[in-house]
Length: 549
Ligand code: TNX
Image (cartoon, rainbow, N blue to C red):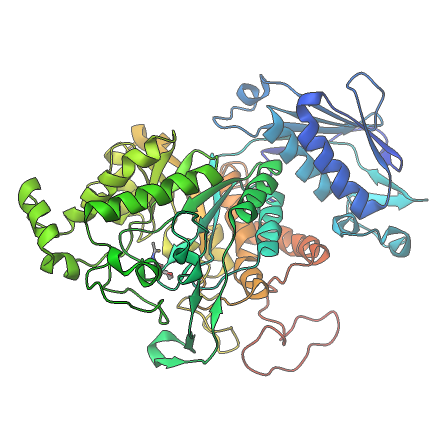
């Protein structure tokens, strides 16, 4: 999971692995071999020794740059995994390919080895799929897997503004994303209800902007509030740590600083960024605020400074400027905004958002990064080289690709995991829905309507978790899993080879995979529905072994 391009059983005896295990790898694969040593030592209790390439070994890691072409892959991450003749051989197109081969190897090993401490001795005697165990050794049936990703951008997004998530959850999420061969973590770091990244030049962004007085209680439409303060932020070193942790797992972190709308927390910290000049409080309700940034040169400079500081934390090639849901009421009344409209000859104030993006773009480009924005930036006039995230449907992606932009497909109807799984009062409170696993599985990252010669403009797809209704890591895991598994297959696997994505064929594999998630300690939603502990309404506990309803 996700399904590989090909998997073939080989003749011959199973390969037995036991400790102390010897892994050979060239120096260039130091990152991958050290990571393998850590996860294997934790899950098996064996000692794992990493040795130089020509030394005899149980597991051989190597790269072969020609592999990508051989696998017919357009993007990085192809690998071949061969279990035969007493050896596990993982050949990657580079570090990423080797890493994905090792993730596949983890799925061939017993689920118990996914745990953080060894339980194998206690579990002896139980059967575990393709692998049988004897006297501490794990036996893997001979197999050849050849595999490569379909898309380069296989993203998972997390909104840490609406609810701050502890750093430990970012590590868990990166590990889980990488386990499913995803490679982008998009962090929505700022919004009306909280600013979550320390900026040295403007300390009030977190001193003031990271905290809110209260939050909505129940659904936003009920207009009720709790009495609980909420907040938190990441220091620069926290985020550097997340970036480094992600890089070890071939995950790139894309920071998002939302502008020129969704900025109430910033205006609360520095009222001079807004239009009234009067102090406002950090947002305490969900939805779209009319407050947006003013268009004064000082405000542009302020956000240049923010961009520079954020770019220094995140070495990846992308910087997300948000750009979604930006009302123009304040600009319509602003002298400065009207003067810009007159000077630029704009007839629609929405063009001011494009103007704003164009002011910010050079700061991003000066760090050699590409600007990413939500699909609203298209209407406003997006900078030429911008990557567009199509969230309001598929059309944004079609338009952007036709105009020559690169596109990441993130449409809410399929890929907003803050939506519920089912129309069922037992489901925890969600913004809307439902989006069942089956629907996610059926998602095709290349929307119909994209001209054939523009298909390669689709970099990939991404699942989103907005957190208005998601207060804790446990709940976040529930919303992601198992939809994220279906998403991973949609964005990694070739549809032709998995059949035209038949859900009835996927479901048994998913159901098998849930045992791996259980070993990893993920609070996933069972396919039958929430457990009594996950449910919003009281339900009788199931008999052991039976589904929970
Ligand atoms: C729309 S998607 C938003 C977010 C909300 C989300 C809730 C986007 C770019 N804007 O601000 O959290 O819907 O589903």
